[in-house]
Length: 293
Image 1: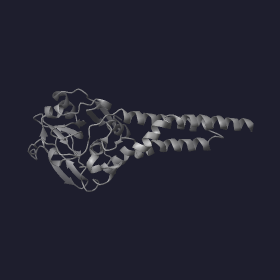
Image 2 (image 1 turned 90 degrees about the horizontal axis):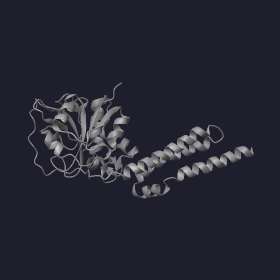
Image 3 (image 1 turned 120 degrees about the vertical axis):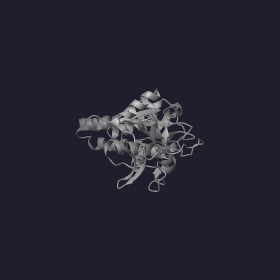
Image 4 (image 1 turned 90 degrees about the vertical axis):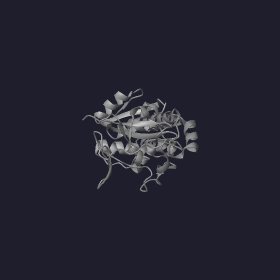
């Protein structure tokens, strides 16, 4: 009996030590970003509860869960603190819009399943962050219509490449739960790799890419998430999807904030010149393709 009591005390003290790691950071996070705090702390609390209930028996498994939860907490804090962001608010660019392409090259078709962009090597499920169905839905403490270009772009990619139907509201919820929402900033850049891993896609970073490489990659049926800076697509930071290449070498896009820009063909050099200068977490260009079985 004394041995069991002594073991319980050691377990309790050890668990308390683990939960205290990052305490200062968590306290600051609770004030600055309540949604992220909740996302981080919930698994820790669950793991701690499991540990207490298992103290008489399988303590080792519960202990491992607690340590793992705290490790994820530290990782989430470091990930979010290390990423300076360009404001991803939905603001129309100053650049003049080019005329839409001929419908034989690309078109936006209304089908029973929703809107589909044609052209290129694959059809793309199209979502617009400003649509009434979700524009006023929460993205953390923000709204999807204003800061949801990241989740909306990834919802298009996942829905088009995997056969799963994931709309922007669902992707935004996933993003918040996994710590990718950035308060009044949009999404942390790590959202791309995180979504790819969770939804069964292969992600490859292309930090340095020329026009010919971009054309070749898109011609194989891959798509690319592009983080744009001020220019033809935004006045700040903005995620779009590069979805294909035309016979004359122009690039087709799916812009989550503009149907018109999604129906325009683009000189690849314009896109490359206006990519974000960030190189965090694979930015500014990520190739996505279905994972090999």
